Amino acid sequence: MTSPASDSLSDILSRLDARVRRVDEERWLSSRYAPEIERFALITLYAFYYELARVRVSVSDPTLGQIRFQWWRDALSELMQGEPRQHDVVTALAAEFAAGRLQGDPLLAMVERFEAAFLANDRSLEPEDLLVTAAAGICASGEEIETEVKDIALDWAKLRRGEKLPGLLSLNRVPSAQRPALAHMRLRHTWARGGKLGPLRTRLSILMAVLTGGI
Image (cartoon, rainbow, N blue to C red):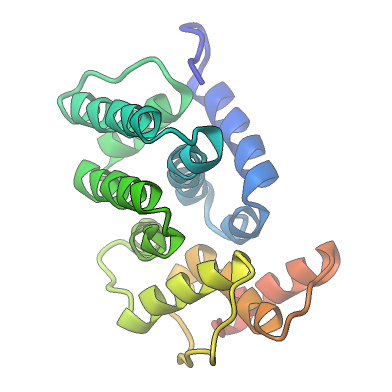
């Protein structure tokens, strides 16, 4: 989405927040427990991820898909050189780059993985592990996330897509600072049983993950 030149960063972030809430409510709910600065950084990251994810449902022709992914490569490269394009997500990313909460190379890696998944028609290649690493880094800069968390992120995505798993990975409690980036993954336990949670129970499940660290 191209942003009018007169729009403030606050206006843009409000639009992105509403968009993430509409298309990715589980992660949006988790992000509510982050401090405001980190929350906006998470929303920016998730909005960027959605731009890549929606290529799969927007186009079916491989060439058109590659054109879209190349647009994002170019946009990120220009942004890393201090020349952001006029686009809501790019404008928000520019603020996060300047603050040091997001970096270009991990986002470029996400573009590569999404393009590979698109061309192979294999959603298991989508970079959920890279996303959770970047999100946890926003909330707890300098803290490493456990390898198991990355594996759980990939399994969470499979369950969200309706795929079956032979079992669930176990994990000790995650650090409190990382929880706004990870709490939504607690929903995997219900999804693995084939269950669905209504809005209230979804919120309660995520709240419990934030309070206890159990995902």
